[in-house]
Length: 152
Image (cartoon, rainbow, N blue to C red):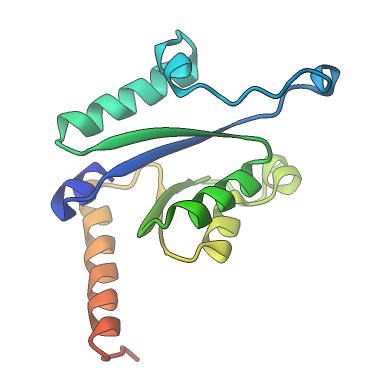
């Protein structure tokens, strides 16, 4: 993602959805997640976001960290719709028939189906060369589409 953003002069938004507090706290005032507090925390989420942000910034990419709160798919969809992104990059689970996928649904599939912009799905273990080949193909398709040319 960093290589793509740097090459295109784009910025990156790291977006994470924080789960709703347990129902026992339903009567408390809903607090919006505080990005600075999370980034400064010693939590695993704070460390991961800090590391991702630092890596991207070291590559010369402008980075914004945003947090949503609630149901993952709803929050991701709201973020994509509300922020007018050119591309969404998401990960994808290697397992297809796990109990987790059965219970939670396939988040990646729903992102692809509902997004109104380009979506690049990256599996863990994929090489930089594979990502760049995918991006090159995607850019070629966009270029042909905008110029009125179509493939197939």
